[in-house]
Image (cartoon, rainbow, N blue to C red; front, side):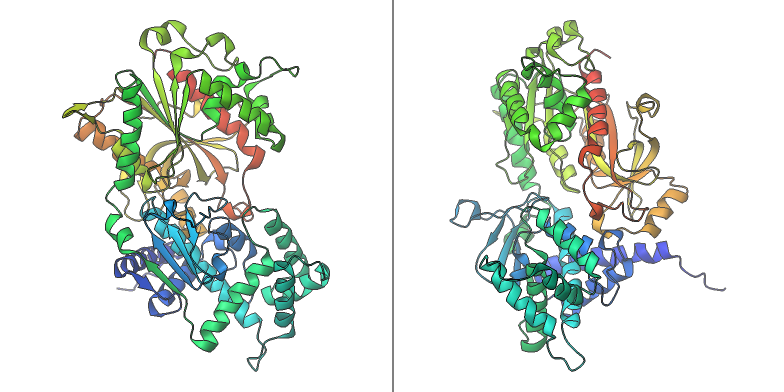
Length: 565
């Protein structure tokens, strides 16, 4: 029989599996060298996959600038200078004299131990570990390009590299004694990019908080690569024994959930109807309290969307602070995380909210609220597999004096960000099932939301299955097209849906921890379209384009909760 040639999608899915297996193996082993045999296997798999978010990863000379900015916004500042990186659990550094370094766009505590070593706290499950290992692998690939671009055919350092060393020294000492346009020219050679590309990248890096300049990053990536090549000073990644012991055991999720239930018990909320929402920590608060908190100001409040846009602007910080202060005095409680999950929680005592002060878009049945006194729990976004751990623990009964007290969970609403396959940034997806990538474990469910109720708002709305992926960094167009055009007919991809649904189905249908009739609502807004060039996650955040879908979904969730169905 003639062997059928594998499709690009099949090759990509195989590369994802190789990466997944390699990362699990290295984690169990405890350490590896990024340019050793095991590290090279990960590099080869990542290059075979060619993730969209890493752009020109396979170009032998061009350094992928958007991809570098993406990862450095999610890695601790200064990690490019460190030869040794140790991934740890929560091991006491939070009470040490080491100042935590928190990346701009990934909530994790990191500690610079000395000039050569960075410790990175991993308390959000395996997805967090796969995420950072993928970023680091990409970083080492780009470092090798910089090293090679910095040497001539005889293996000697180019003049541009020597000039970069001078520039970085002056930059570190905050001297202004170099011409930036000349510096951009040197840098463009080392990056293998055009002058325009280099200038644009420098500007983007300069605007990003907690990220060093592209001059600094280029120098240190190239420097450590040269030292490994010339002096055999190998770069290494370690996994602490405590991390390997704790991972997968729900230690942080169990403590997180216990803290929430203890709070509910202390405030006599635990016997009342509970509605759980997974979302950001601003939209529900702003929708319930924004109009009331800002009622006395001269400027008219306007619609909920217009208020949200005003609050989302840089100048909206004083208004956001005012709303939060008002909310904390009128039925909202904030539980900042101390467990290690990095998931803070808001609890809303709904019967303390005056319906007359709500925005016109939010409808409250006052008789229903007065009689039932529902409580809303808003949990900040979980990360990948962490969604299963946290939801699984939250839905378990509360152990109090050898009694098991079941929570009266009425509804669970998930508002998430996702990559869309049928539309553009800011559009909406309403799933009817979640499917795990690679293993095709699937979780169909009855969604209380419909596509039709979101239509007519100026946004495209797609309905169908959603793919829950191992990580946003491990995807490419061939895999996306397969999910879109095959019989799966997927409309988008995200990281938490199947994990949440696995926990909810176990609690409602197997463990009987919550009612089997719990109402489920899932709605996602598109943060990117990975099928379109320039619209991946690496192209930048949604910005104000995310306001309309965020508050539209929030409005729909609240209008379901605040009246009897």
